[in-house]
Length: 128
Image 1 (tube, rainbow, N blue to C red):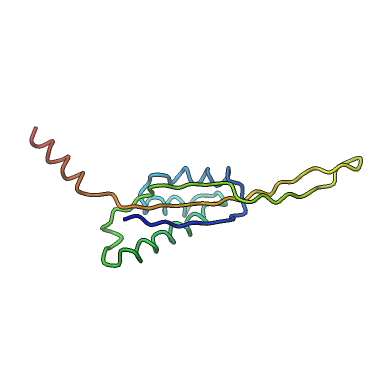
Image 2 (cartoon, rainbow, N blue to C red):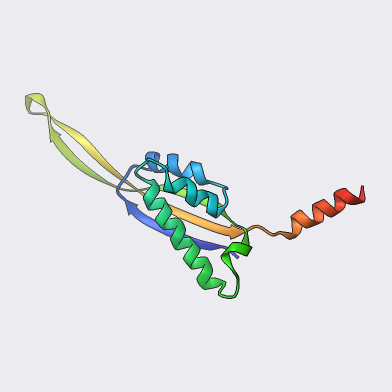
């Protein structure tokens, strides 16, 4: 069972947020939380909070299951471009330079890896 968490209108550029998102893509949830905790990039605390929100959403959907036994991993993380605020900064000779203040939207999906596949593959190796 998967859980989704979304973070909209984050006031940083999508390019900077994708650097952090690529670090945790496909990793287990515990490993991703450890990476985000000590990452120096400014987007890391926001993604850490989003990952905790996705964990909470998963826990609400699966009240009878334990997080430790679920073997959760980050199935999908997507960083899209959000609104862009356009401002003008004064430039020489009466001109104006455009300043683009970018924002982004982050979508995070976590899912549990089935443990059955690992057991079946080890049994098939023993049979050979």
